[in-house]
Image (tube, rainbow, N blue to C red; front, side, top):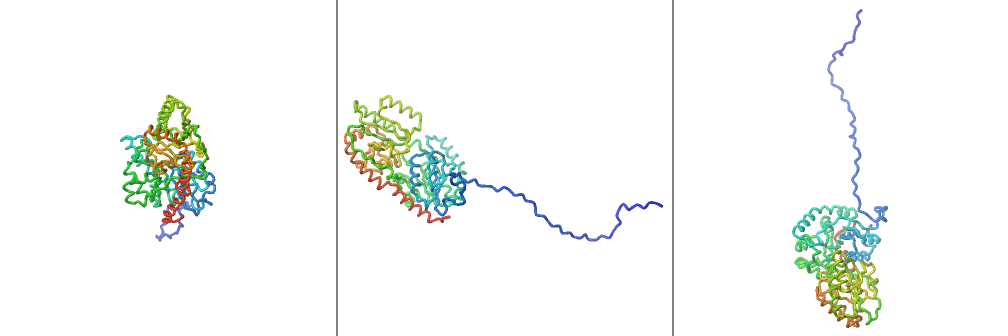
Length: 453
């Protein structure tokens, strides 16, 4: 029997509809993507472990101060006084630095201050600029607009209520406030109408004034002469511009009783940067004139508290001082933190600069009971009355400065009688309590327009 093989193909069957089988669709496999994290601004170590659990700024007004530099110059000293005397139970202050320095660490120690860092948008240059450099400065300013983005994140992260820019030098704080729609105070400490080769406005005077006006809820000026330079905007909206003098803590700068000593040399003190822009050389030139007038007993001694910013200028001064044999009468002490200690034993504070918007050493000297001898120019003309709190001399005139010193040396009792006058004026006009009262009123006025987060 033959083998029966199975068919190689299945027998044909009638076509029927294939049953529909429901297959459960699995959701697509989605791998968890790493979430982008916004790196918070650098905080002091005491905040990093508990920064969001119980932040010290909770239920307080939050003000972001824009500080362009971390070196302890006049603007930074004024800012420190403001921060120290703002009520810690009402305000928390975030201070963002465009450049680090010792002032950064100094403020980090304050309990109501959080220090941060950012990149500056500089629209003021501290050197002579030709047309080509000015064009490059403007292009650089345009390319650096993105530097406001980290500040925007900072303001959103900490729910900032108000931005207070501490100087005209940089503009990133003003742009940030404008984008977020929060109040902005521009604190103008510069007098740029008086020509200063080390203070060059990238956008020029007219456009700079217009930008300050448009980007500020309030423009705070350290003197009336600073306020008046914002013509014509100050006439169009005078309520936006107000004068707020710099302050001094009169409780720390306590006058030291000094009976007049008619035999000892007259002790002169200079505070500030040692530079041609500050016209420090006018004092040296005046001493040269006086050296010829007093060939035997030289009745003056100059104490210099400050640092050089130009090595060539330092070498030039040293050569002049050596050539005229002034070494015994000029003492360079460098920068000093303890201003009160520097004031002890001094008879006169000398300020030769012609482009000062205010003159911080003037009010510090007055608080310490020391009369003033200053160039009759800029902000100092508002701070004291000649013959009552000190004396003025003609700007850029070392010979007139020498003549004033001769007069003062011959009338030392008049100088001694001024001590009580300068202390009284410092307490009445320039004490930090006076400034804080005005500043808090300004904050309250602006912050009522925006809610507390």
